[in-house]
Amino acid sequence: MAIVWQDTLLSMAFGRNPSSHEMYHETDLPPLGRHGSEPVGLTYRQAMNWICHASMKYFVVPASPPESAIYNDIFRTFAEIQASCAKHMRERSECQSLLEVQEHYSFILHRNFGISYLCRPILSRQGRQKMNQQDASDILSRVLDALKQSATAFISLRSISNYSTRSWAFLHNSLCSALMLGFIEQTKGLEETKDIQTQLIASLEASQELKRRSLSNAYPKALCALKAQRKLADESNLTKTTGPGEAAPETLSAPSPSIENANFKATYLSSFDMDEWVRSVDFGSYSPLEAYDFIMSDQFAPGSLF
Image (cartoon, rainbow, N blue to C red; front, side, top):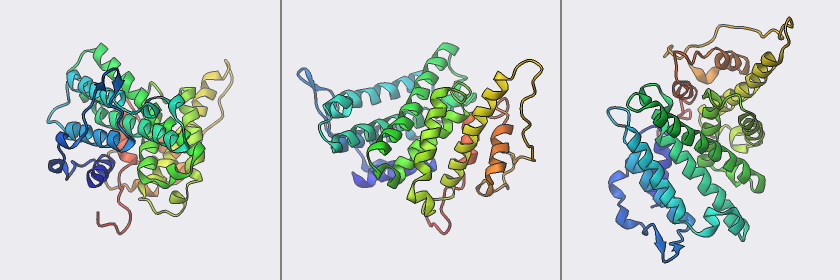
């Protein structure tokens, strides 16, 4: 199970199909549902194994964007896993120890990242072409909520333990969730998003993993982009509050790298260049998903044979 668990997390990070798919069968897992009036009470490890199984089931990229029924099936599956968990996994008030609190927030983080990752196609224009506007809006709303919950669960974990910043999976899932929130039109300027960005930046800047550069180049780059998003959100608010006849403070401009330039090494963006790049992205031409993929490209660490 541990091999499958790691393979699933790595597959989501690097955007490749899991290699252990044929090793994993639902018969290896405890049943979901209830015993009488009570949930079966999955442990943290059992719940994570179910998340891995569900992720593998829906992971394979379809030849065409999924229809709304597929998204709803994903939501139902993850909701059933949550409803089958032990009490402390479902309710913070049921936690009786520090370990149970950690498991509670860890489950929230991974469950919601799984939902948001599997539903990523909804963030592209092509991904919404097979559904009506109401269905697309409802699905997008649930994905945005999943992104928020994933990022805030990391912040809650960080407040009680340093473990979350020493775990590659926790760092990846939370940083990617916050980064996506900063690219999506419906969330990028919200106070809630800015608060998530501020707290996450503080946590990640204190992370020894990022300081030691033991992670791939994509993560320092993503943190740089997150800082740029936070800064530009304040600039946007300042522009909105500038009175009639008043000029907003000038912002410096510089040539910006292009998403279309495949030869551009985004790894080497300075913080100034990143500010300019985030400011210049034309979301009329590019989707939040394309901007996110551009930032998270080059995920392999120097010298890595993975």
